[in-house]
Length: 373
Ligand SMILES: Cc1ncc(COP(=O)(O)O)c(C=O)c1O
Image (tube, rainbow, N blue to C red; front, top):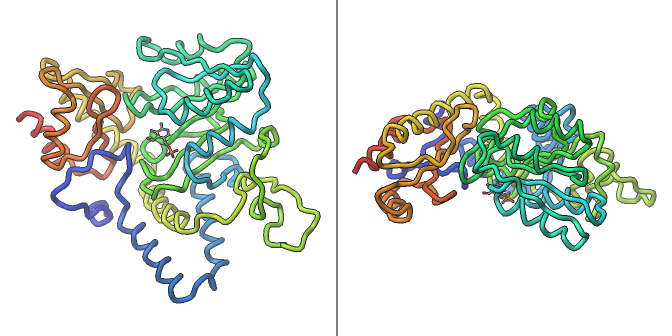
């Protein structure tokens, strides 16, 4: 099934799912069908579009094991969802937010921007510490209101132990926010098991969807704590009753979606999610980790030529492996790989390889062979 779903051009070795993924064939077909339908019938079938939107919420609920699809909003991207949280919470001067030292700018800048309200952002140094969770927990104090971490770091590929962090936050009445864009679709994540309050991820990485459609999970019990900054028809309890002058905000996470949904993105992600859920996250995770361990073994055996930036311990792994060449610059090696059509990224001080579960082993092998020169 995988080969026909990913008819990538033979010339390319695609090791860049941590950036932007190729679409599965069925996703392209769904978008083409949606385009043809729009051309021939316009929005005559709008009720079926709304049904697809609702199915997508249920798929995402299943993916993250949310208690209800009412806890899922469909937003533009991860950064927007982080902003909904940062600008929805009531801050007071002296409050602080804890993040880690390796965060992607989206999960740093948004918190630093709260400085104007007297809120400080404290970054736990997880690079130098054998236990990143201990470093994070040591950074929390009595003024910490929220902890926001990436489940998997975009540069190093380090995977955090979310249940440990979530339990500590709940115990101390600290909100727990998870940027899951580098883990959802690659490795399993259970929002209830890790006691997350907020989880966000755009579709275009491991979920194999397009850019511009994102999952935002908000735990029902704390939904009211987020003040709303955007208003419109779609966020109302009865959105299609346009004559209703006594409007009410939706009780569900749809309250975070002010206007018309991104129906093209919804149709595309719905198709990608059918592939992910049919294959099953257990199978996907096992294959992602197999690829990761294959690469880690290779770099560990070549320790005179490469330094692994991704931590060695197995429980720290997801889909990303980052390494630094010792005998040349990462830039020059990256250029060589680009010339050979190995599509990867310069990140985290080295070269980041991020194959997905379907990446054929022979392609991965070929990329490593090229490193051998
Ligand atoms: C950890 C992490 N968070 C957020 C983003 C950006 O997300 P978005 O473009 O959906 O706002 C990225 C993109 O690389 C990322 O790696």
